[in-house]
Image 1 (cartoon, rainbow, N blue to C red):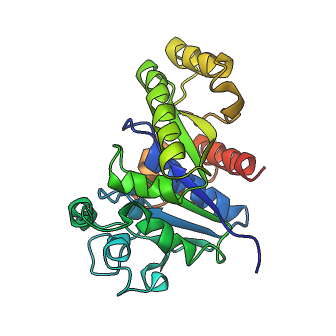
Image 2: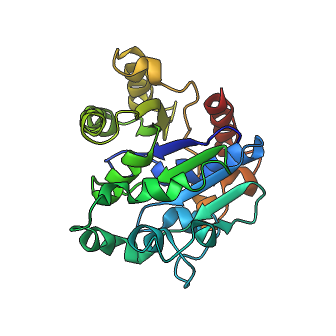
Image 3: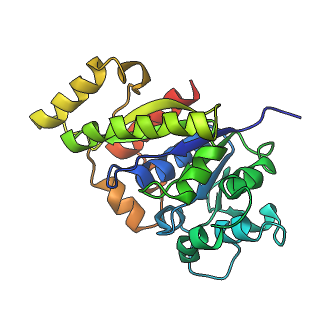
Length: 258
């Protein structure tokens, strides 16, 4: 058997920091770098699913079916091939928001996603998971399954302050659920070098002993092409190859691969 996939959570308890955009665009950029990528959309709002051009409202098998009724469904049956080579998706579904309640009395409920992923780690180089913007049973499932976490951090004071809470949460996860998990990178997002506050926060991230060694060299700049591409259900690297957004995510992908 070949190398097993890197299993990566893109997570931040704070909403609006560019989490879904990072899942969609990093995974697409990695596929262009020749990596076989599986995206798992664990957010009931299913923006990642839509962002990869897949309709989350149809009756196809979703991650909801796999984690609530894993014995009934094969993981392979839930995997959708996107329209781009080497980029696959297990879609989310609105029903996922009820999974929490359905699983509340189930044995081993925090490991449901881990069991799903174990069946496909040989088939991919990278598995990237989107998370809901709050700490819920779905997020715990992602953290239980992941080997590493990439944290998008908007270059804004609130997002910077929220990092501390996230790091605490991850320490708790390490102690209680998944000792193998680690933060592998902090990604500055919505960076706007024209504004002092954006430059200040990036400087703080670079000089803070807790964060500086984890910081990616590539900040994701503010770029209108990124939201425009998600509106079209296309990652920015396919939507407009020469945009800042595409350049930044390609640079990030190369850095991520190392």
